[in-house]
Length: 322
Image 1 (cartoon, rainbow, N blue to C red):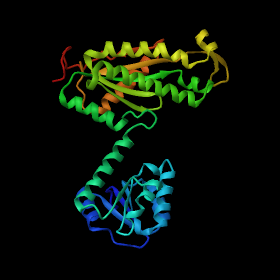
Image 2 (image 1 turned 135 degrees about the vertical axis):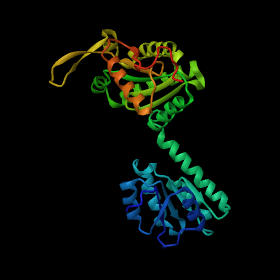
Image 3 (image 1 turned 120 degrees about the vertical axis):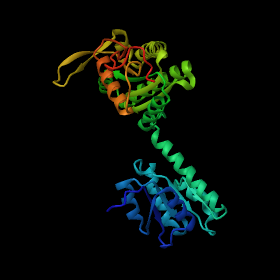
Image 4 (image 1 turned 180 degrees about the horizontal axis):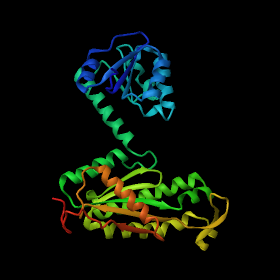
């Protein structure tokens, strides 16, 4: 049976054995270390399976440096952390490794405990960076699910708000993807600044991807937060259009059949689900209902937020979920 443990690749052109401290660290983490003496094989394995970590033996010299640089030059493989094990004769080349893109360089100057701690820190940073959306620097789906689960377990009365842009595709078609990226970034800042400004640590904002965002807030903050978000959005967004489109309040675009039709300026739809009248079993259930409410919100004209008022048959209105 194939071993399904997360994999660490150990690249050593000299075919050195895996160092004891690394073997012990891997064992303690429940990971699988795979020695690989060929750089091409390492690259193929990274592109094929995205291992948890690549460890490069610095005694490989130029071959290790070249492999590190190639992995870090490809946006897909660059997310895999690379740690370099520098021998006693390679400590003076630490700068070269960092220049090549290495995420960590471990030298014999560190005690085994510190070497292991540095690997722990590298893995923690990598998990955090992958979980963050690169364009907005907001937490991604993993952290969104974790936040919803935390509030469920704490018994809080909370609201999950799914925000989505209306007429965003048409905007991209008329302007450019650079303009579209700017709008997504603006929306991320609006959500972050309003939620954090009103609620501080009581609010959470995440980015699913594209123009889809999730923010999680206390139930009693729905009206204040969402009203402020929509007001700021509707004030700023017209200025992302040229003067002619902004003054008219619309422009002409083509539908899928190639027919011209009026396209209004972008608006924002927010679908909201709460645990006021429902008991959620899993964050996936919350996500499904939030998506449903977002779709309903998009059928309404203008920038709106709509709250799911349905409740479980066995629950009394006003129950907090305890």
